[in-house]
Image (cartoon, rainbow, N blue to C red; front, side, top):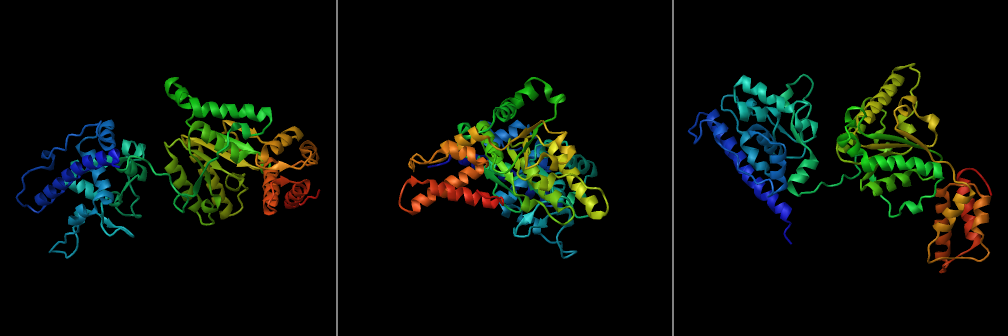
Length: 450
């Protein structure tokens, strides 16, 4: 079956890539003083695109791209779509025996083709005209929509080297959207140290006290109506963008589960940050790793969930040596990134007191997830077992719930243990012994006994 979105994107991009090839051929012809059909690249009109025909055409139309902006976008796309189109820039000068410095470009680590740089772009549009070179370099400014909306940027040049020698870097999301019509979800990796988490359960499965549930309504209100509040009600000039929340309480009390439910409620992806891939002993690496997450999450409507966040956002220490100073700089950097982020950020900690005060002052809400009381534990026990299992008649779940002060996560571990114990014996009957053995195992984890 033909994917019409892909087909339409391909048709419009084919026309624009042909236009790009014409422009490059003309620029090089003029550069080498050859006869060309055109005296100026601006004489080569871009194809007329119907914004309703493809996502690519709609994207170009949405931003009302001018000649140079559309050309820059295509130049960034070329290595991904038709890398051989840029091979012509490998021409060597007879005088120097090497490539033409005017063409810019670099070689990738794995990509064998020509990787265009800012220098490549200004060569095409400005040639040797300094005034036009200066004008077109502003397309890489931070306030241009390419940068503001994380569409295209220049990678940082090596220290001391010209600004325009940085490679053109097109957002992976934009490349996906303009080609296959959908944005791929990132996978856990060194370049993206976060994993998407989901749940098949609903709010009825979350057993919490009424006060905690009421506080969660505020976050639900934000993810549902935050955009309306800021944009339509005019609060964008009064309130900070984004929403920051702290979940604190003992392990197994529902913090991660609640984050998943919020994502399901708002139809947003929830990404749990893998702190083992974020925190580094090397100076500056932790900040760099966090940047990878926040940069990709910008304008995505994701929920970022930092579990055991005090490992990363803990209290700043008194400065006694260089290590303390850099550790405090990390906290300050993270504080700024969270403050600037336009999405929902949830930090989870076992103890509120472990968190740096600078963070807690900036949270829109701080929600306590206490250990469940006897009645709440009974509900968790009652709802925990499968409908295909049968509880032995001598089991009194209310008595079990009242006798053992454990978390909901621990109860579900016991349910899993007891259910597997029954299955291993070829039965579906859950005995009191299975439950007691499971309780004993959970308590031993905490150094306790029945």
